[in-house]
Length: 623
Image (cartoon, rainbow, N blue to C red; front, side, top):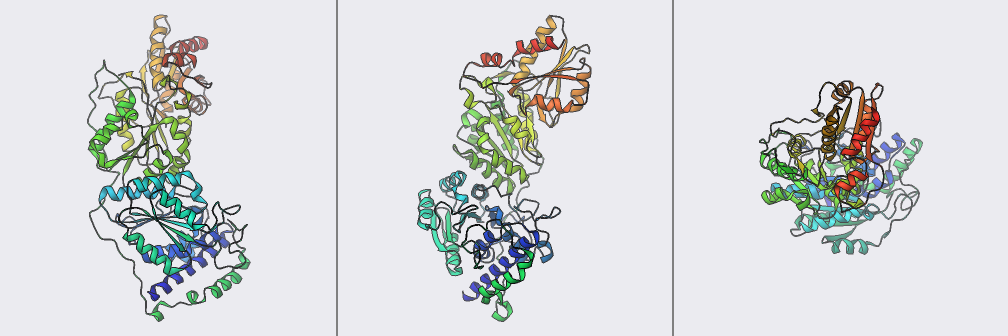
């Protein structure tokens, strides 16, 4: 055991040196945060984990999540020690053309998920742990957090769900270095307070000296043996450990040392860790090889094309798009065993219960904890799952940071927000998703879909299941709506449907979801008054079919009225207006512009000036 201890201390020393050099060369970064956790990370990678460092995609590798993403130098330093990165690679840290970014993203192939916005790593780890349970795999997931980070509520959402599902394959590591960015953290070095918290949430805590390698090894051994619950190792550490001028001192967070100080600082570390600095594995008679995972069956690729049978809706039927989503989700689950569903205690409203009843082993009830739900989906997606995340669209706003980080990590999440707009009626404004189009459309690589009937909802779920380039969002309606399309009608991401056109139209109405039905009512009434208008179903709001919109608008006297059950800012109307910029087409936008209130759907659509009567009035004004 002495030999492995000396080897691990040598690796921790090397990682401190690498972290110091790369941040100094970059003249930015967080060396002191890396110094505090170096002993923990060295022990995890060179003692505890079972993995193939040459094959990060091996499905049975133990996984590591750097939740405290600002300590990224440690992540790159450990892969330098593994021979994956060179010293030259480390000199590119934080440079524009480098994969070694200031906070890890999946541009670096060994990163499990993008981190940096704190409080998400444990949820991602719980998602990965769930994937292992689903697939009957034995790998462990190690999540390194900071003590400042665990003030985030999402950490405790993750802690509770991991204990609930008995994720004994998840090991939390908390680097309790006492100092945050601007001062001491809440509990400083009162280690028992951390232990009591995690114990109360159903975890087995181990409090250790995070700079005593034998204590670290012992805790990691106990963590691997645990069968009944997740384990957290609470390590008392010191920020800047090893450099007297900064160790345990406030004011050095996120500050790189000057380049001309490097030689002096390296000499200081060499003196402080003399045995580790001059360690010679050959002389010690020690040879290290990674402990490889047991080889089991290969993982099914999430990107295998998925085809659904045609839906069987009747033209006279009236059905809510949220229910059609549930039916399509069940069909997607039948088509691929990689599909999983997460819901936030609203499965009987989102209709994910159709999936849950059929495939309970692939359904994760996340309860009322939307932030954790989204990041758990990120973890599942990283393990080749096809996750669908569902809740009321309004409640996704509290998880926007998690969704944003998922987009930064290029995670292919399929998110479904039900109860969109004022048309939900009496529940009132707290339940009405009126910001969701703007929120989702702002994400890089995102897709925003808003079906108007059951057929389009069903077909668009299939499109989402096959979209792997980023976030896709489906906006669904609470109330029943009439079937517009034949079951064989095709729908593609980036398309739209011209549902009415005469060739002598005086204006074009562009709508989606519930307002498409209002637009069609307005079109019929206007026609009875001798006014012809075209109508476009803009079911794909992002990306949108600008070419078709321009063509139809030109054939409709260059007049466009957009109408949506969403706030004006960032909605369908503004996206159409942007697409038609630098043209002679005049655009008028109807949208929700005031704070709504309770009422029945018809009252609220009329109050917001987005019903058929308001559309007719706007068209006549344009004429």
